Amino acid sequence: MTASGPTILWFRQDLRLADNPALAAAVARGHPVMPLYILDDETPGPWRPGAAARWWLHHSLAALAEDLAAKGAPLVLQRGPAQDVLDEVVRESGAAAVYWNRCYEPFAVDRDTALQRDLRARGLEAQSFNAGLLHEPGSLKSGAGGPYKVFTPFWKALQAAPAPPPPARAPERIAAGRAEGERLCDWALLPGKPDWAGGLRQAWTPGEAGGRARLAAFLEHGLTDYGEARDRPGRPGTSRLSPHLHWGELGPRQVWHAALGRAAGRAELALPFLRQLAWREFSAHLLYHWPDLPEQPWRAAFAAFPWRGDDKGFRAWCRGRTGFPLVDAGMRELWATGWMHNRARMVAASFLVKHLLVPWHKGEAWFWDTLVDADLANNAASWQWVAGCGADAAPYFRIFNPARQSEKFDPAGDYLRRWLPELARLPDDHLHRPWAAPAEVLAEAGVELGRTYPKPLLDHAAARDRALAAYQAFRAEGT
Image (tube, rainbow, N blue to C red; front, side, top):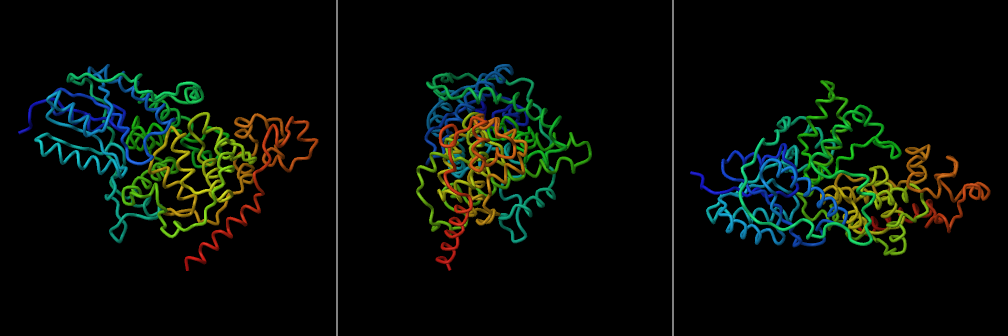
């Protein structure tokens, strides 16, 4: 027999009401529901939400609180170690059950396992659900019975697996429990002075409604030509759903079924986009099975790679002052909006680890602090992919030429001119390589290298040779 008493619904990275299985189960249990969010700044290591993510979290919680209030259940905010907070809330509320949706970061898995064991030992009902993935880690196995290490067979297995269940609607009404909480404004999640978040406010609408609107706009205008347009940073060709997915304002089941529904029976139209959703799944599976992915190279031999400590180069990279326009445009977009186009991410990351030979961990940490979509699995797996030390990684000797990349994917310079206004008057044939432009062209465009725009930190060809030499020396020492 189920014990009588309220149900604590513990929100984490599932900040939505629709297709929220823990919420649906809590309502179905038939007792008052106490929605709870815990700001746990005791997260081990460096993986607390960064500054941009905290900005997003503030606004997402504000939106969630408004949505819950409209259903009749106020959101309770508490701060502190999750175990201590839950103990206190259970004691004060007389709760008989605690429900939550699962997270897959290693520290979250360890914490939740211990919490569930403790709660059940005390006679409480403690249940967790899957709201964040199409298929949970362990459900897709290779022919050898283990986790996939290469994306393509993982993608094939995901397509062959049973379709994820259709998303459920939000409950019409939530019977509320009673509890006192803290005020969101007291958590200091937003920047003080200087207020650097103006670009974030202009670019994003956090919250479940913002996520739904973003998804609808993408499906209306971007799904059918996504395969080609997604590589063009100067065009609105990507979905920009990543922060909504990370914070759980949208669930992957919602996105999957909405994309297939929009394709109206022609699944091939949706596959390029769904394939990118599968990369998110693949990264989550990697982190679950290799929990040291954010700190250690997946290919263990790379622990001995001869990285350089180029602090000056790293600072220039962070500021978008390398002298390579595509790299600089991407880094300035990141600083302004908390997001960077995927093509620019790959080129900027490659520049850091291969041109500058700066360890991938430093780039991973910078992205963690500046991305509104900072996701531990995606961030770690993607940096290791670029660095050549991850699962299914790009080979180390694949070294992007930033100028060629922008010439190919931003030929008219729309992206470069948006984020590098000091180069806006350069003609297209010199915009991608301002260091090679004749003096009279630079003068006419108002560009003075070294003053209005930096000279390149290094020569691409020389940097490429240095990176390959470092790799060859590393390989030789490892054999």
